[in-house]
Length: 355
Image (cartoon, rainbow, N blue to C red):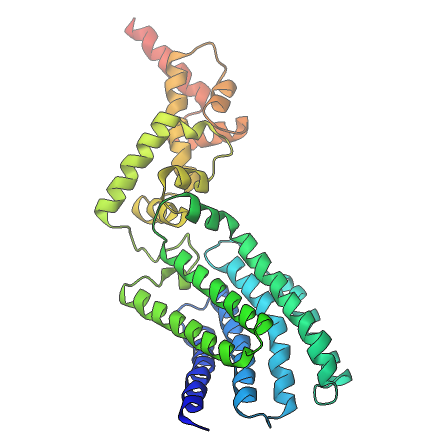
């Protein structure tokens, strides 16, 4: 093997090796072991197995056909693990074991059956013409599903002029890296050569991002769901700007009147990411989004109860953005210590005595 091929083997193999190391880190050594990290570990593991197969097949053609079959079979799990990783990271929704097992188990069983029924060393033509193409098609479908479920975030990235936050940089990097590896394997004749280099670039880039985020103490999104930030508050000046803009927005446009208002809607108006707004509300104000918006609704309701005797208390609740009478009464009493009717009566009694 000449120097050029030695260097290619070293860098391509290093990519697969780094992937295995990162997989082990997220599975066993990460400080916070959460669901998304386990999916990331599984994703990196199957990618590394697939890349290792390509590297050794390219540089050592006499490699065992069994290893080639295992490497090809690993591809069928890359898509599902990518899909569930993008679904789990940064979200409060818990993915049940039944959910991911339903997607993973059938493919594992299928590859086991095919492996015994049509072993690679006896059916190389069948694998090359049919099975591998089917695996790459399945992989592509899951890549599309993964991009689709982050579509709202991607749409905001192109429609709203703002900087990407750390979670978005990381997530887009992982998805783009996996997509590029799929393109290299499925559309290029020299797949081993290019995919090895791509895999090295991909995992090296992830390692570089990890190092940068760790240096900046921005590893929160790899440790806990987005709504929990380890008490890491947004800096004072930035928080003050968000607070002022948020108050002006709610006062001027009265967005709280929309009973279906979502955090993403407000973040879009503020031209910041939902991640930033959620972090500001949770860690800087110590409030959930619903509680924060309900404060504005209750404040508006108190003003209407004080000046408008024609509207019923129920109508005032709907006017201020509550979606039901019971929610209005419960929230109002929790925040003021009185029911809307009781608050109105108290005001009327006070005004009568003053007159």
